[in-house]
Length: 213
Image (cartoon, rainbow, N blue to C red):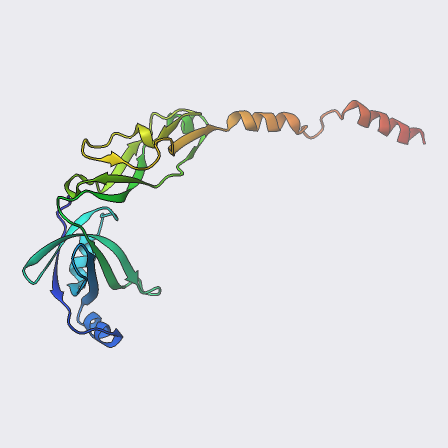
């Protein structure tokens, strides 16, 4: 688990007016729900903005308030569409020691051999679903695709997951593949005659008839 922690305070006042007052003091209204009953809290804006840099939806963070510590995901962050300022945060609390099912982001790295040979890279899958204990949950899965050649693919079943992580997504789903496009381009160039090339025989016949007339 990532060691990302947020110090929060229990929030008693509710409503849009109370939330607006909090934001003016540099605090962000939030709620934590899931394993325990939902609790309204608020966070230091600067600490939260700095803390979420580099985390993903499957990164487990710790939220501390009223002498308690809760493990949770940063589920959603509501932002002002104009300024980008965070208006509200939802934390989803998980139970330590209990198997959970969640989605983990997949990131590819490297420049495939097949692309350097003229192929086209496609990465249709951005996340996979897994089951594991919270302590075994990876924040992301990085896949090296540099060795991928033309007409080759990497599937979910090819991933090397930790011993405590069970794959839920279908193993035949494609994470990355390289399609070889050079052959298609060559065929197109053969089908389209170059400018000034000889016309087909039937076109020559029709042209001769027109000249006789």
